[in-house]
Image (cartoon, rainbow, N blue to C red):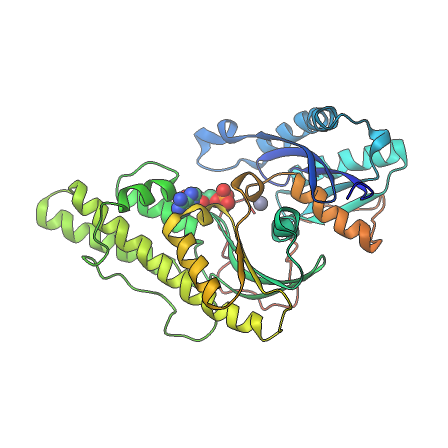
Length: 360
Ligand code: KG4
Ligand code: ZN
C-alpha cells in the first residue's frame, strides 16, 4: 500500500480534537486531545467551551500528528476534515484549519461525514469488502447500516428513542452504580440472576429492525422501586440481579434485531458477508458474544474495531478521506460546515432521534 495517498485527517465535531496521518490502511500517527475534564462540571458538552478548545488545540494536533508520522505538509497528498454533523463551532475549527492548510499549500481538501468515518472504520482495520452490515451502538447512537460504498449507506433500522449506552448509563444511576454505566453494569451483572426480574424485550413483537430502549429503563426503575419498597433498600444481590436482567434484555433485543438485519443484508448476496459492530457498547462481553454467534449462524464474518478506533479519532476521517480521494471526489475552499448531515438521506426520519448527546 506504499503508493496509496498520504492523507492528513482532522476531527473536531464534538469534544475530541484530533489529527492523524494515514496511508491506505496504515495509521502513521493519530493524536487525540479529549475535553472530558473541561466539561465535567456541566453534565454534558458545552458547545462554546468545546469550540474554543478546538480552536486552541487543532494546530497543535496537526503539528504533533505530522511529527509523529515523521512527515511535513510537503509529504501529504490531501487534507480530509470532518465537515459535519456535529457542534457547529467545533466543526468550523477543523474546516477553517483544513482550508488554511489547503490555501497555503495548494493541497486538495476533502470534507468527510463524521458518521461515515465511523462506518468505514472496519475497512481501515479489517479491509472489509462492500457491502457489509454495520451496527453502530454507542452512548448516542444505535443504527443498522448497509455500507455499500464510501459514499453509499442504507439505514435499515435504528432506535426510536434512547441509545443502548444511554440506557446502560441510566440503569447504573438507578442502581447507584458509578458512570460510565456500561462497564459497571457488566461487572456487577456477573454475579446476578437474570431470570429474577422478567424485563420486557421492546419491539421484538414488531417486524423490522427498529429498536426502543427507553421503556426498558422505566421497567428497571419499577423493579428497583418494588425491591426498595419491600426491603427499604437494595442489597448487592438485588443490584446484581437487576443489572443482569437489564443486560440480558438489551442483549436479546440487539441479537434478534441483528438477526433480522443480517437476513435483510444477505438478500443482497454479498460475496464476502460481514457484520461489523462499533461503538462503546460493543465492548460488552455478553453482547459481543451474542452478536458474534448470530453473525456466525448467518454465515457472516464478525468484526469489531479496537476501541481506540471506535471512539472519536482522526484516523477514521483520514481513511474515509482516502476513499473519497480514490473516487476523485474533492471539495474546495467553499467547503461548508454542516451541523446536520444524515448518512442516509433517503431513510425516513426515526420517531426519536436515537441520539441524545452531542457525541456522534
Ligand atoms: O462510543 P462511545 O465511547 O461514545 C459515545 O457514544 O459517546 O460509547 C460510550 C457508551 C457509554 O454509554 C458507555 O456506558 C457504553 O458506551 N459502554 C458500555 C460498555 N463500555 C462502554 N456499555 C455496555 N457494556 C460495556 N462494557
Ligand atoms: Zn463519533
